[in-house]
Image (tube, rainbow, N blue to C red; front, side, top):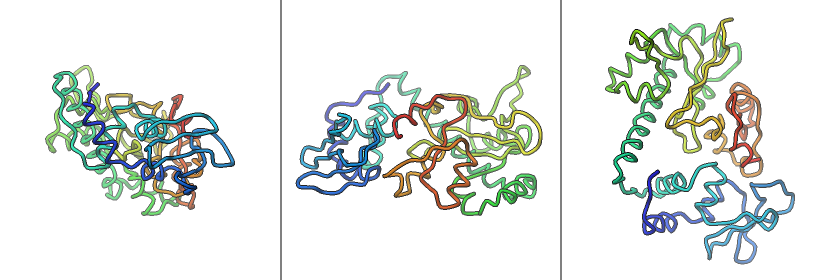
Length: 294
């Protein structure tokens, strides 16, 4: 786990006004020197959640939770302190120092490469959806009455056959370690590389920062299993993420409440009908993030 100096952490804190950050999640109104709103960490009808612009801290008089901007982001997003520092540094366009520890450096470099693999794959699958070879997927989205805007908002795509993605990734210059770590490709006992997802409707899964961290693939015939999801890896933990949160965050309604439904298509269908503060827990996981935002 990387460590940052006190000076770096203080620079990031000062560059992120706590009122501005919390306002992205909570509807705040000024009352005297402070701002108040409904606490996002417990259910309440009267605002008891206070944010002090002078002290740069928050405190809920209802449930007792409080802290600074790092504390808030860690709790609301379900991330650790280091991730909160990195997120806020990115928000403020602050370049964090590189790591001196070789183990940390190698891990962070691999994570960065896996994010790039996932981003490339998301675009690859999405473009595939519009090709003649994706007719079965095109028929499905037509039956579900998904608009082109919806397809683009969630970057829905279609996977190809056998090792089409693997071959495309190799041509793009990606190496086997990051490709395998992403979980998008498997290597069999004969040493052959095979795409994990084949002939499936693809749903990119993004973290709260909008980075593609995993995928869900839905079968379009009667074969089983109906859904295949990415395995947990260096960038993906099922229990710490929600499908559709990156899209739902753009809705003003998320400051009031977050609706949790069962699956990918439930999120997408409701979003298309104008209900945009909606997410779904990832399958087969006990979601810690869900507990934080309800």
